[in-house]
Image (cartoon, rainbow, N blue to C red; front, top):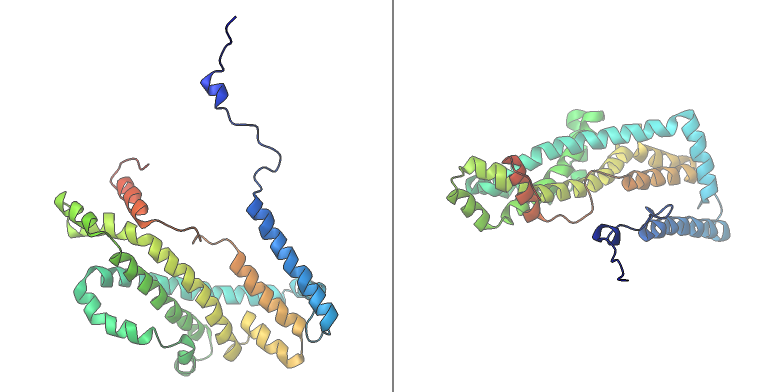
Amino acid sequence: MTEVSPRPAEAMAPAPRLPLGWIKRDHLIYVASIIGLIVLWHLVATTFFKPQFFPPPLLVLSTGREMLESGELMEHISISLQRILSGFLIGSAIAAPAGLLMGSIPVVRAIFDPYVQFFRFVPSLAWLTPVVIWFGIGETSKVLIIVYTTIFIVLINTMVGVSHIAPNKLRAAACLGATPLKAFIFVTLPATLPFILTGMRLAMGNSFATVVAAEMIAADSGLGYLIFNSRLWMATDKIFIGIVCLGALGLTPLPLSDRPLRPSIWADRIAVRLAGGDAP
């Protein structure tokens, strides 16, 4: 008797997934790293320091729970996030179009490039005192400082993205009859999008640092205010709560992925979809 060979579909059928098969090794290492840091924190705090100088994680957790129950912690977090998101979104909405124009039109770049190169080396905190004098200590001054922080990071990354577009793509679009506007929409914009997202992610990190510094100097609420005001009462547990909250907010998933983006593939796929075809 001849042996019956397995059908191709049966031979290529995927093996049954194990329970919790979605958990990858990287996830376990990620969690183990966090647990290891907490254990090290506990050992160092309980062995070498007094709680008033370096509080252990259990004390910080207990104080944080009390602040959550009273609503104080969520108030500081929500106010800081509101300031960060307002300034970040306004700055990105200004910087991305400006970077596209400066990168695409040489005349526009020649006009505004000296100002960009000058002001991007002036730290945002250098403007804090003038902004407070002009706009007071309300929300406007904090938002404007974050807008200033965001604009130059996103703008420079956008200009770099435009400069990295292969000239052959623009020539090919022109040969196929694309007008400058269509070439901008179907080639320049998709190819620059990964650089814009990278600039926005970098700007988000700088926005956190800026808002904390601004809240320490001129504010009566927010995580920066919580950290700065707690030092007056030697409440180091509240200081660590503010620090942990800032780090935890940075760990939350953002739409701006850390995964490297390949501009050429993005440009090709988005252009095909906009043209009504099926992208691979």
